[in-house]
Image 1 (spheres, rainbow, N blue to C red):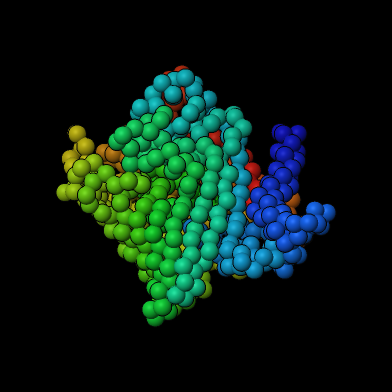
Image 2: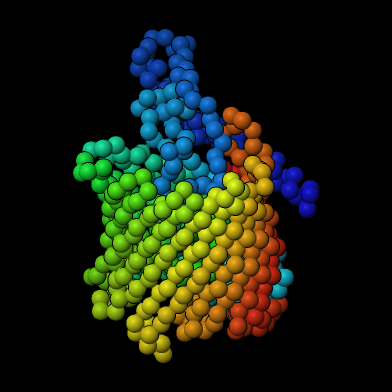
Amino acid sequence: MQTTMKKAVALALAMKKLALASIVSALFAAPTTVLAQAAAPTDKAKKVSPPAPTAEITSPSWPVSGIYTAPDTKDLGALTGYSWLSDVKVRGWVDTYYVSNNNHPSRAVVNANQGASVIKGSNVSVEGRTFDIHDRSFSLSLAEVEIEKVPEMGGVGFKLDVAYGETQDIIVNSIRGSQGPSTAGDSVSDSDKNIQHASVSYLAPIGKGLRFDAGKFVTHIGGETIETVKNWNYSHSFFYTYGIPFQDNGVRTNYAFSDSLYAELYVLNGWNVTTDNNAGKTWGPSIGWTATPWLAIFANYLTGPEKNDNTSDKRQLFDTQIVFGPFANRWNFMINYDDGKEPNASLGIPDANWSGVTGYARYKINDTFEPSFRIEKYRDPQGFTTGVAQTLKGYTLTLNTKVGQSKGSGSVLLLRPELRYDRSDANFYTQGSNFRSSKSQTTVGLGLTWMF
């Protein structure tokens, strides 16, 4: 294991050098050459060097802040010296993992029964998970770059997240309900596998600034999101996997009444759809309040029709997060509660409901070591969201460790050993070659993420 870890760290550091060189070359080398030739076409020996960076490159912090970039995210103008790139923010990561499932389910058996699974992936051998789905296999989960131009008052901006990896394939295939090429009835397209977020924004000069964003968004629901570097634990909780959407497409409005209170309204095509599957829209009011420096509350609501060509049956979802801390600059806590309802859910399920509560605790031992513990309970009494009528419980310990961090490097390696135990009150997990013959599953894993 130590030899494997050394190889993984060495590989990640090599990837860092190669990726940074590629990014700089792609963004700036070609334009600089063209400008030099235009300025002095008769002096082929003359070279034009790009301006020196105007700011020291700082390493990213963990956990990475949410969907939109934070004020301390790297500024391309400051990094490169090009003024026309000022206020353009950039960040990214490469995420890999290795996990061992104590049940050792047969890949052939699980894949033969993919039709019964909500999460669709290739060679699945860790069930009930969103993205870490392979037993004893080195896996590339996600490589992503986020670029954002934050709009000024009266100005426009944009947000573009370009992603590659199995995470994106799982999202699109799970939304489709199958694996394989797109079909005429799809509400998503193959481009969704590489464009995780793409939106344009305008900050209207109304009061403190009324912001409008239009395009494709990562869902704002829940205390977790797609990228593991934004979450307290490496693996995702049950409520994220089964209870909420992955993505949305539509319009968002945001208004900050003060530094501690904001409100949002989303008007969306629906859950997980890029192209709407009916004539209705899904509405999502949201509010965030930092009551004190150690207490923040976020409440979200979604309601709208989600069935194909049906605008009568409206799904409802209430989501809230309460964040406590930091206390003594070490302890952080979060509680996430979700409750969903679907009328006339499906054949044999006239009305479905699902709910989940998840508690998190994170303790900062020092600047490089910050363990997190998660305990959760997810109820799906009709089996509408998981495919099995059950109550799931999960216990997860993640040892978040920063390695390879140095001043001025602009990047950091995040090493995340994780122990997880999942249990259902029904047979939900495959044991060996026996499909869904076990009520529990224990995994030991290791996530390795390079953030830049």
